[in-house]
Image 1: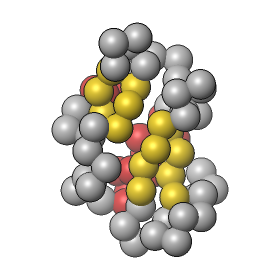
Image 2 (image 1 turned 45 degrees about the horizontal axis):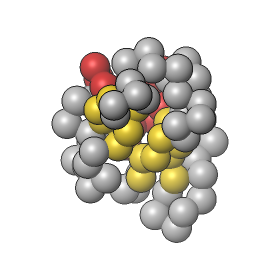
Image 3 (image 1 turned 180 degrees about the vertical axis):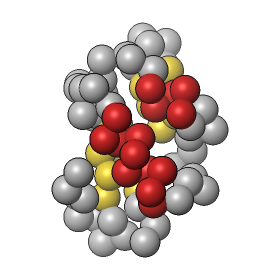
Image 4 (image 1 turned 30 degrees about the horizontal axis):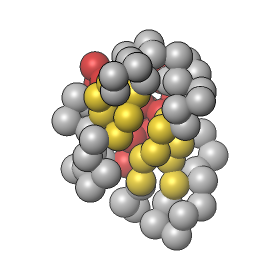
Length: 72
């Protein structure tokens, strides 16, 4: 499916779940807000959805190839 990941930084609670689950894709910025460091990630769709669903602030936004937000 090729899901894309974004972070709505205004919703990020800095829990670190995404960073811990996929440090090759996510990192904290200087303000300890999550950011996507690898937009061309190699995560499978199931993993992307699991990470997004686990975000306590619902800050991980997932879109499909056409840019439509995926309902979690």
